[in-house]
Amino acid sequence: MTQQTQDAQTSIAALAPQPISEEVLIEKYSKGTEKTVADVNQRVARALAAVEKPEEQKSWEARFLKALQAGFLPAGRIQSAAGTKLS
Image (cartoon, rainbow, N blue to C red; front, side, top):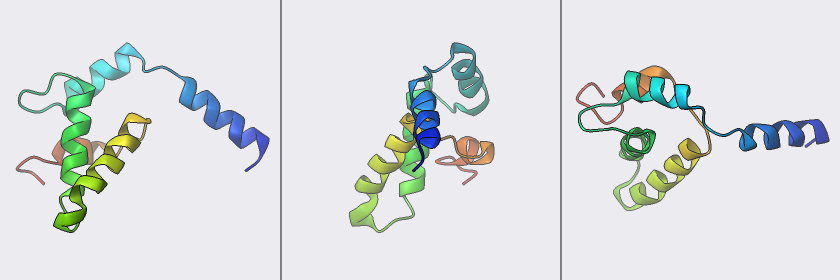
């Protein structure tokens, strides 16, 4: 990895979540009783892990949740439908 790539990753990781971004994410993608980005992330992580072998689902859910918490954003259709009757 080049120094420039490392610097870019550090800058991205250091950028705090922006309130407007969180508001938009919740407005567009929250379902039912979800009120926070953490609620949305938990639903999405659980849904993505559900297609794995039953004995591996908890491990995959934790991995997906960690990626989401680190800033990974799936496509909007995934954020919206994962873990709902639409998926």
